[in-house]
Image (cartoon, rainbow, N blue to C red; front, top):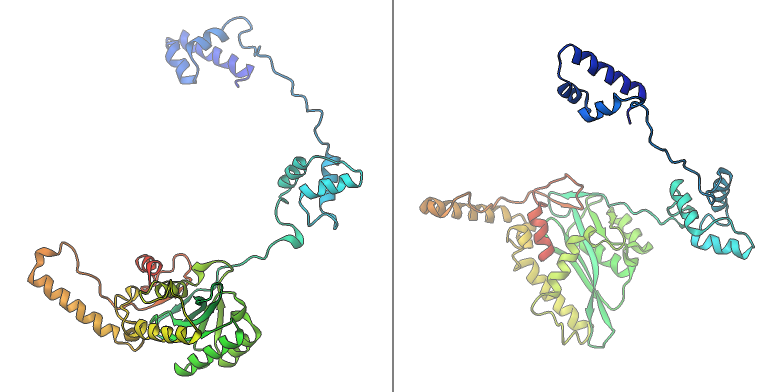
Length: 360
């Protein structure tokens, strides 16, 4: 809105420059107004703003400052500070008190930035677990428990399984009839003994299940010098290696999906055969198709180097078949668990991540 003084000044400037020979139309455009506007302002009382301005009247139901303060003070007293407005308003009504509607309570709390979980009702915040990078075997292990269906409907056996995330080798497994921190501690002790783990050498990652966080398990890890790491509740992406391994296990052609396991002995025998196949026969897509055992003992570098040489020789013999570089058979140097954003390791690129989701 242009005030009256500016309008009068604009009319005066246009008249002066017009008398000096400057056309009015271009000069009006220079001032940002139309020639028709100048004609209207040039009339008697044309610079007066004769538009009617509506008078804004505060609504009759508007809360006063004292009433707003009273509501905010009320919702923060000890009796109501853990409750939401939908519960506070009925409780006040039971006491014969009416202050405002629930929507008013919600609106005032939102304006005061208090429309969140308040005081003791606020849920615990779970942060992403620490990132770990493995550059060699026996630095970071991941473990979990999965169900094996029994022949009796509703009954299951429990498979405890530990994997080395660098080599993907299964370094230990047990099958039991129940979940127990005692059985878990026995498994980790046995695996550490077989792999000759030293104090403070290993990080063991798992979810937040009772066997993982039981006192017996915690005491065992402290005795072995193993650093525990836990994922967030209900977040499978924090433990991707174990989840991927269990998918490979349950999609194996010999897994008894229909017949199920007759007894725990049969379940243990099947798991033993699966672990042998997985470690020594399974060409892992996340390891550029070498077996976990070959990766664990350090044979993957030589195998991948031979593959690279074969591809280079084929390219020299038939160069027209390659428009770009040959397949990358470079040995994976590191694997990361729960990497931070921006952290890129050779063994945890986007391509490998997608492969991990498909199958181990």
